[in-house]
Amino acid sequence: MKLTATEKLFVVSNYILLSLMTVIIILPFWYVITVSVTPYHIFSAKNGMVLFPTSFSLEYYKYLLEKGSLIYQSYGNTLKNTVGGVILALILTSGAAYALAEKKLPGRRILILFFVFTMLFRGGMIPTYITIKQLGLLNTSYVLILVMAFSAFYMIIMKTFFEGIPESLKESAAIDGASEFRILWQIVLPLSMPVLASIGLMYLVVYWNDFFNAMLYVTDWNKAPVQLVLRTIIASSSLPPELLEAAGTTPPPTIGIQMSAIVIVALPMLIIYPFVQKYFDQGMMVGSVKG
Amino acid sequence: MGSELKSAQMIIGTVPESGLKKVLDRIWKFKLLYLLLLPAFLWVFIFDYLPVLGISVAFMDYNFIRGISGSEWAGLKYFHALFESDMFWTAFKNTLIINLYKMISGFICPILLALALNEIRIKWFKKTLQTAVYLPRFVSWVVYGGIITLLLSPETGIVNKLIELLGGNPAYLLADHHYFRTILVVTDAMKEMGWAAIIYIAAIAGLNPEVNEAAVVDGATRFQRIIYMTLPGISGTIVVMFILRVGFIMSAGLDQVINLYNPMVLQVGDILDTYIYRVGVEQFNISVAAAADVIKGIIGLAMVLTANHFAKRINDSGIF
Image (tube, rainbow over all chains, first blue to last red; front, side, top):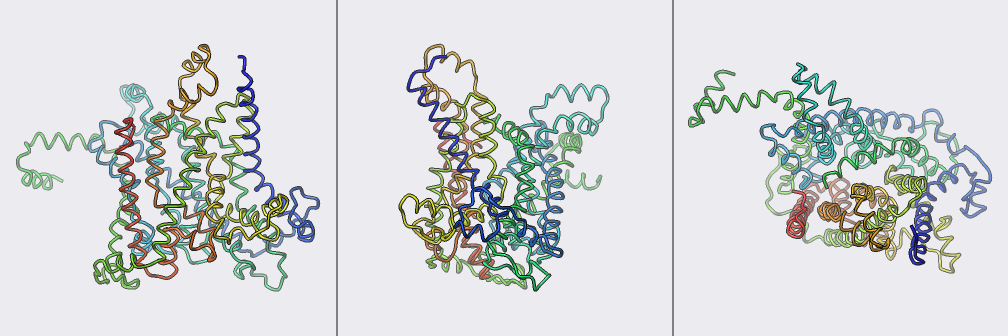
């Protein structure tokens, strides 16, 4: 394929602009990691210009991860919420999606409307808060698992996927005498692993990164997820007294603490993400087939 | 079950026995599917529909201790209070302005990004770029807000160092009402653009490659192919995404703003959601905040229905 001069220019500038943009997007993350391992005297001597680590220290991490630090407990809470939440969310979402993918289901149209309506109109922050309170869920250890466990949007994506499973596959199994439950368990479920992985990972990100539901529904530090603790660390210019039970230690400069806390909280997602990226792509592909 | 069935028949009366039995048989046949549906149905009822009823607190002198049943009706009192509040109108205006800016950048950038990525022919390079630009989506706004605060800090922030290098004066950017909205728009694009582009990348991948090849044979340039083939090919997706976007017109990015704003920029940065949070949860004016929620919900619903209506009339690709 021969390119004209303008096309060549277009291709070259496209490469350059995209690369530049990528660097701008990635650099902040790199910078945070560098700051978190650079001793403060070097950071301040260089006036913050520490794009490449010239000396290495883990003092901030040591301080944050000292015994008795709130980080451990809140990390445990986040793990518990995330694991429990993703399992519950997948059960709710796939169950509804599978049922509504059956075109002959009586009442299907009304049921779909019932779910889609929630995408158009919501009670809003305060009415939801009041509902949670009336139900006696405020400040319980499972409220954060419950409130994020279903998204009509993800359900629709999954439904589109289930609709794509050939009817003949299920019919021939039924003729062979397989029960409905067995068809679901032995034929549909194995076929659905990719979409379950995609949607499960989307929920995983939602649960891991939630801080706002926690701000609303959890006031007890023992139940706070790690994002909420991080928010407190970032928002305060000095460290919150809740953070450390080991009083009497002189805390290192705040900026390093903040940056290493950011790394501790964000790292798991950033590490697993490139490995599971294909599932995210897949999920979006499935969902957009209809569009 | 039997007597219930009979009384149901007595009430309905006109339905012949065999007809009703047929309907019930049909429903019974799908019992497993209804069972699978039930948990999600209950969830949506409890966590989506009960809050819709919870809107009633906007029309009450809500008493937090005694709950909804122990509170007196107050009519439109709190709506009047809301409409007389300057802070509400400031937040209302800011929501629309910030959203408009974000719509221009946050809606168009992903489309451009998808088109640009599509022109990259070196596979590994394209894959690397994609992985990199999706990345910020996987951290929370707490994390990203913290990173931005570091970058923009007045003393050690790297952005201020750049400004100095280019001959400008360093400033406390996050506390300056001239820059705050720009910061919101730019950082929103940086964080979400890559992920938002996926849907268009998928749509482009779904286009028929033969048409493209035929155009190459006919001597169409790259530009012509983008403008006359790729772009029209994904127009359906663009319309759907636009409708969804319009439905969120009253949400200008709560997670982002609440992690970046400060008293210095309240006049330009306060949005409806942060207003509702402050008034309702921090100051405990439950009913005023709920009234703001009602306004927000109704406008959002009206906007998405209108957008859908027009989309259907223009090219028959609405979403409902």
